[in-house]
Every structure is written in C-alpha cells, then in structure tokens.
Length: 142
Image 1 (cartoon, helix red, strand yellow):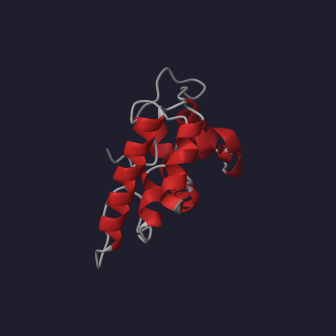
Image 2 (cartoon, one colour; image 1 turned 90 degrees about the vertical axis):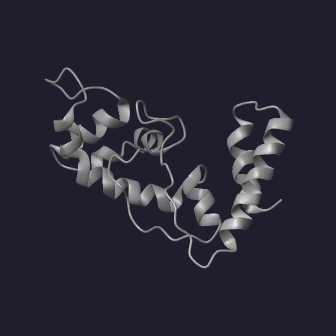
C-alpha cells in the first residue's frame, strides 16, 4: 500500500464502491502519480470540490460546513462564505449571486489555500502525493 492508493481506499470505503472499480481507480491513480513524479515540473489544476453547481460531500464546501470556517471572518465575508458552503442565499437575498461570490472571494481563497494544503482526498491530494507544490487558487475556475 502506498499513500496514494490509501487515499482512494479511504474515500471509497464510505461509499461502498465495488472492489473491481476501486482496483481500477487505484491502478489509474498510481500510473498518473508515477507519470507526474517523473516530470521535472508538475503543473495542473486540482478541483477542490465535487461540482461547480453544488458543493460536494468531501471537498472544500464540506470542510467549510463541518468546521463552520465562516466563523473566522467578519461581515460581509462571514455570511457570504456560509451561504456558499451551505448553498443557501444570504439573509435578504433570493439567490447565490455575483454579490455573494464577490463578498466571499478573499475569505474563500484563504480557506481554499488551507484546504488544498491538507486535503486527504481528491485531486489536490494526488498532486501533493506526486510532489507538486501549491502555486495558488484560481477563483471560480471550472
């Protein structure tokens, strides 16, 4: 067991993924990590959440929800970060709109940097396992 395979085993254990699917994912990930590790420079974009339209169960939004990370910030960032993480419009608003995302930009970027540096599952963890160093966060990147 290498650390990269364990990442996928841990992630899949809670979702009852069939063993043959898990084996294929681990094999593919191991090949990708070996390919990345052989490069002089590693460049890529790691998605920090499962979906652009709705925050995932294991990514950045889930971590922000579980830790109530918005409590670290003052208004208006505080309510904007909470709104994005919970997929719920801010009080007095009917949608998660441009204003919410703009109000959360600096705080969300700070949270994303911290999350990417310690995420145990997902693309950021794979890149770190291959020796990549975090270079920055692309705001609202798809």
